[in-house]
Image 1 (tube, rainbow, N blue to C red):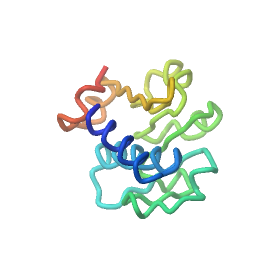
Image 2 (spheres, rainbow, N blue to C red):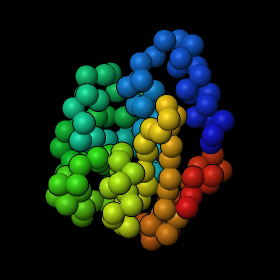
Image 3 (tube, rainbow, N blue to C red):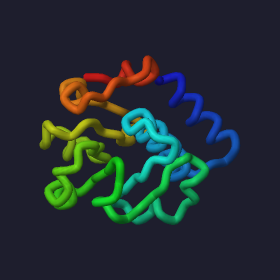
Length: 138
């Protein structure tokens, strides 16, 4: 998976994709791995993502967390409102560490994408991951 992320990252830089488009590509990979649908409904609590075309990544960005297949959250108050949803990824490491029932985290550190997935939560939710994602299980 690190090779996959490196490939996405370097290809994106080569073709001049913005940082937001790179993030959407990675979010799409995570969402499809977790939800396993052709088009995944994704809700992100960061308005900046909604300015980009999301159908390039086979995801549908929706603002309604209630109708989303998976949530990507950075704010604690949103987590408290939607903690009943089973597929939640944090985009803040601090939020991920604070709530042990969050499935995983996707965040940037030192200019690079990082992904951590809690294996115990994945097992509880009945999610199996491909070999590409096994490296991120913790």
